[in-house]
Length: 381
Ligand SMILES: *Cc1c(COP(=O)(O)O)cnc(C)c1O
View 1 (cartoon, rainbow, N blue to C red):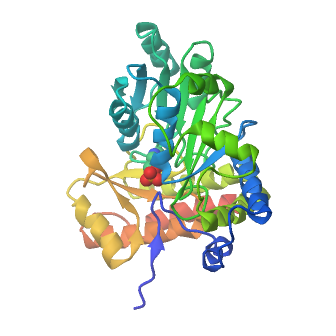
View 2 (cartoon, helix red, strand yellow; view 1 turned 90 degrees about the vertical axis):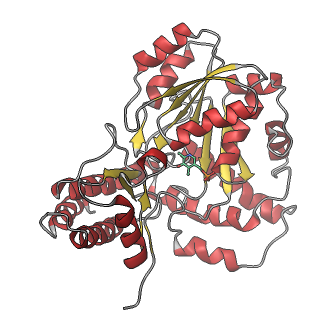
View 3 (cartoon, helix red, strand yellow; view 1 turned 30 degrees about the vertical axis):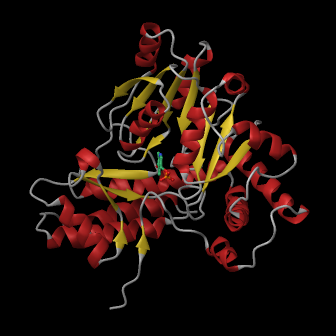
């Protein structure tokens, strides 16, 4: 058989054909009115997705670059911060902060467990010197969405700023940056923004800018003030990834023409279909608060989780993701974000069913497909 490649991972994600083809076009110079025009359209489009009046800065790096920029632009050596760590990416905040000599109170949550408004209030009461709280909109390693709106409410009446990793969540699940009082928001190009890896996005609230003005941590390439100054001139401080930015304009056009509400609804339907599918064949989710970005599923008793992922990827070329760190071999993750459609869910579930039956799992074959189809049919418009 011809083996077709199906990218079903939570980043990188598939890129729409219109945006893909731009990568083969001749490079234009970045210090030109032509490029500046496109660049400013991208900035406006990003502000639309961020739902912010503030500027959004475009960094040439993967998402983690913008996470680092969030840390070293707002803090000073010895500052005290809280990091809500519910998985692999939540942990990264603590790692970056410690690399800069920040004193981190890391709250290690069980993967998939929520963290409430009251818990955060309690933490702040016990740690009144906290300068920033670092958290994640969608923890991709566990498929969990956190209550950013509640955290924003808590922090709005404190001195501390709220820093959110929205790298997989922003653009797939609601998180209006200004309305929910997110002070620093980080996003990345290869997840819900529907272009290849290589760009990261970053915004600061006025409250966060106050910290930027006082921050003494070392910085050069990711110095937010350089980006602010250059954006006034409709450009970036260093050579940007020209083709990626033009690709981003194309994908933002697709996002804008659908509209954010419809986009969130689309992800909700894919999430519902995936959850209905796996539950119908007796599988369990890892997360207590699953998001519509990526579904983390527990490997059933008696099944080799490493073999499951290996078979799906190697034999069926269905590139779902395995579990990371302590959950390696214990969970697997089916993504449904960015430029994925209803039948991508069906593809993932079909490959999953064929794999599970091969590995000896006892279930009614076709059950997951039927359940997912029912959700898609009811919601298709
Ligand atoms: C993918 C991801 C990251 C890491 O982004 P890179 O682009 O690999 O640097 C960070 N946080 C979350 C939530 C992610 O999904």
